[in-house]
Length: 512
Image (tube, rainbow, N blue to C red; front, side, top):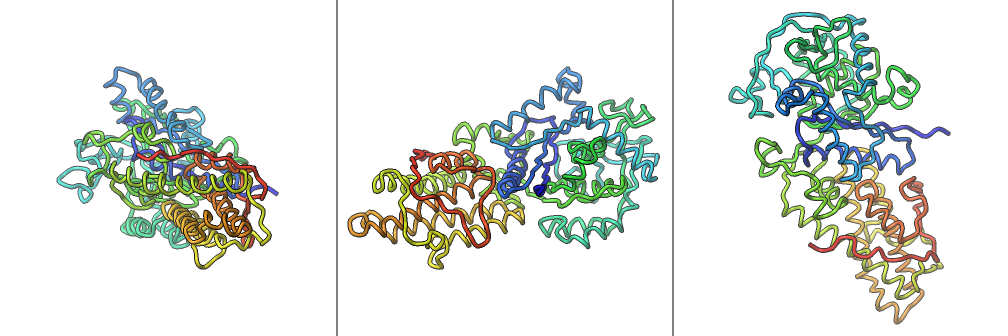
């Protein structure tokens, strides 16, 4: 039987600035969701890449005395390096300068043109170079873009091609009505519905090449290049073969898209209208995350508050960095980053939480059972740590965990794992295995088996978020098949085999 497919993509960051923790938050969120869907047995595509056209890139290249392509080639390596730095598991990395993408964008343009949705007209607008978007007066604060207040607004007046966005108001509202979870969270869904209800204006999708030459040529009109937003959005389908490999495209499309709240309009309205124009199915869902702020301010190079992820990885490690950004930054809301909060999370949750639990459980097996998981006479499926109402059981934890991840609440899913870890710690304190060793070896076997089994299940559950730690625990517990497919059924939870010779992973999270 063919595996169920799942396709998730990030937006593509511009390469005009180096990646920072605000950039990588989206990569990590998509990575966690992709790993979860692989773990439950699905055929997953996880796409990311780089957005390399537009005026910002063009001006940066000139500033650096490079051609735009040379500049992009240099910058893209910094983004590719994140795969190793943060242990990302993406399958696709697409550049908007890739020939396959260029060809797809031009074909997509032709499809929209054939449908009567591309026209030519005069264009005069206030334009934010930072957003690469036009701005109405109502969107401005003190005459500036609120997202990029450090950029001067520019007034553009020229003849451009336009996309007939206004034509798709009713179709977009119908899409939203039929799929009330199309945009998550609900407040962003309401925001985009209200935006579309107010009426849509056709938007410019080209630039005059003489003024801004860095872009993909408009088909049959080399005097114009395709506007960067129209170009970049097509990556979601060009990366899976459209229009050359339709079988592959149809196998994986539609996708789940993760985007920041400043991309809400482009991802959930503009892109969906473009897909409808080209005669293609709309996206599956749009997940909108918040911003990471520092001292209440959005991360910005101009404000000097940029933190590169490698700063955190070099000091705390990959998994600790992943943990903080996924567990302590609410998935769908803004949150403030601080080194103090990072230290607290590291010490409380990792060193004194998961790390301490591991360092308590594995030595018990060595000390009391010569390193082998003890045999138990009773049914392991009925162990208190799996089903008891007196503890936060594995059955309940796993159900909550899956529900949270299906709703893309990564932070909530992680909180359920740590609640289970605390419940398992409580079990140690209540059963006191060090006393049982002196008076009741049979009960000791039952207790220690349950604790090792709890650790076995924790290894699986943390995999999407802490893959290195998960692997280290798996190696110590001799878990076969970890990272491939979680062997769980609704009424039968996985159990570690008794008699397994296990080892200690050592100190995974040294106290800071």
